[in-house]
Image 1: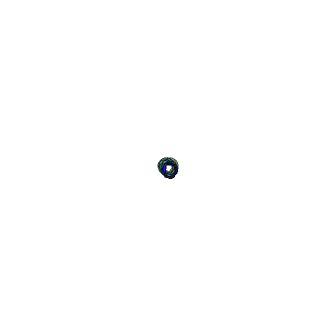
Image 2: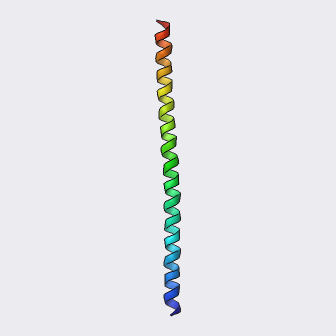
Image 3: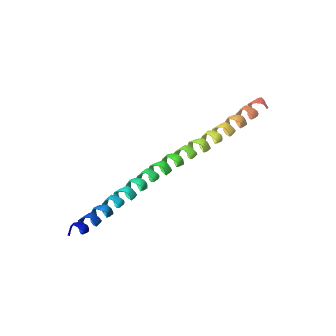
Amino acid sequence: MKSVSRESGRRMELLFLVLIFAGLFATYDAIRRVNNNLIDQTEEIKKIREELIKNNKK
């Protein structure tokens, strides 16, 4: 009987570890996507700014 409870305890530990890993990975991925979007938006703003400066000189 005790070996059955140990086995289920190990499975629960493994399940919790997998869930924690998945949660950390999902958080990392979300932060990475937001960061990439911010970088893309910053580059777009720079391009628009350069175009405005170029057009104002004409």
